[in-house]
Amino acid sequence: MKLLGKPGTAAWYVSLAALITIVLLGTWGFQRYDIAFGAPQNLSQNFFDALILFSLETELRHEDADGHFLPWQIHGARVSIVLLYLMVAAAAIGATVRADFRRWRAGSLSGHVIITGLNPGVRALAANLLKSGRSVVLLAPEPDEDLSAAGAVVFDRAAPDEAAFSLAGAGRAAKIVIASENDAANLDAMAAAEAAVIKSGQSGSVVEVLARISDPPLYRRMAAERRNLAAAPNLRVTLLNEKYLALRKVFNTHPFELAAAVHGAERPHFLCIGFGRMGASIVLHILKTCVYDPATPVMITIIDQGADAAGAAFRDANPWANDFADITFIEAALASNGQETAFNTAFAQTPPPTAAFIALGDDEASLAACMALTDFLKRSERAIPHVFLRQRAAANPLGIQRMTELFGADVAVVRTFGAVQDVWADGDVLRDA
Image (cartoon, rainbow, N blue to C red; front, top):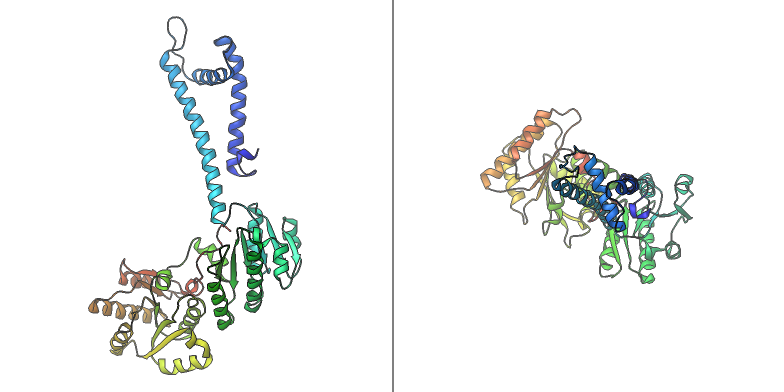
């Protein structure tokens, strides 16, 4: 029955129905064959001609003077049977290829998934993996009866060490997902998993760390550790934003319209117009989730009225920021002629901005900023590949549409900041895990 595919799937039921149909037709055909053609010369000829006979009798019969089938009917029936076999074979091969491709995307054609921690997102991931038939081993701080009943193997490990990962079969695992309660525990579990995989000497696993990014310097240590292990022959480590599991339900694919701005430039440069609560949130997310890979800090240019005072307050509140980015605050009122000087200053830097955030307090101000920016880009013959617009809860759709149309087809415009705050993550993701 395994040849039919995975039990319970649509392809399995279709294959089973096709097999039953062929057997029944063959049985019926053997009886009809003796009546119509006499004793068969061999089994394969019997079966094939029986199917031909069935095909002929389901159509209008055209017989010659002696009551026999016409040659074109027999040849047509043979072609039909061959096509039927090819269609069944193609469906079976296609189902197998799709299943193998999904398993390949998951990181391995075989192997289980090891998960540490049991926050809600990871709990949902474990449940989905179990539903898809994957084997799951949990290194959890507490038992989980629901996941255990669904088939997960649970080890009580509040702080998984190398021995725990070895016991869970880290070297044979297709994927190891680390989602501890904080980044300090993530770093310890990450090192333990790496040691267990490397010492196993087996083909290796993908280690994915759902970093909480509560402590940016610690996050950077995790990134440095990941780079140190880049040469390990049987290990690949990926750092992920903890909120990505929820985001993939919204985007259903790589949601990185910003990816080109981050990874497509030697040194990403973000232009943030407006530095209120939303603008400060955007800058913090850039600092926490975009800067662990580039060798040099990213660049952030902030344009706003009162930017000097806001910048001083921001640096006082986040003294670690200078380790992650070169931040420039430009004092300018966007409703005045000062915006022209501000844009000239921003785009005179090397490299020029590769993504812009319009983070002003209302749609009218955002529209005015978009018009000022597009006018400047046209006059100076410059371009910016990504623009992110703030769409307020009570936004006028026509206002957002006007802002989008201003930038033209060559600019990737993302309308909602609610998604932008959380979309940055590293490389491969947990989809099809």
